[in-house]
Image (cartoon, rainbow, N blue to C red; front, side):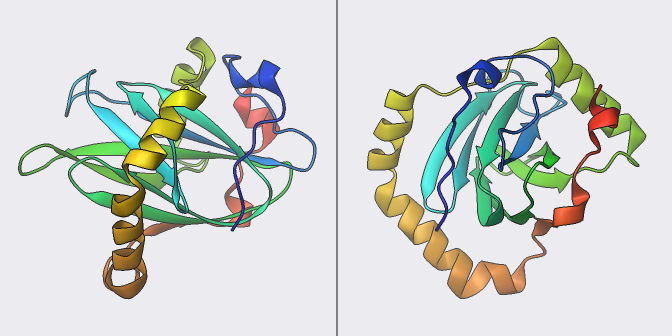
Length: 183
């Protein structure tokens, strides 16, 4: 499997859309609304079999990757999966939707295009006005150890049942946002 790497630390904390490093792709996971769950609701994010970060409130996380195929997922009360086929030099935006759940809130992914003007402008405003949320490496390591069995169980369920029975979304290579639209 491919591993998410961060090679350009200046873009890690910079607000506004930052192009991916040479030969990389970048995804912005953006939560544009706190109507459900409020500002304290935390969403845990995973790439393949690794916890990669957590984000609270109307905020975003920037994930830079080597081009290729990935499985991203998030969890609150439910597990939401999304496949991605990323191309070099591309920027993608995924809206993180929060819905009412049984005990807590539920999470959903909505890969975005510039044609969805309202959501695109809301995501753009959040990214341009705030630096990305960055989970400290110590927290990532701690949660990967703590959640190892849970991650394995969820990926097994995904492979054996969920990917064939639930309508999960995908990011296709051509769903990248043109650089001029990000300004």
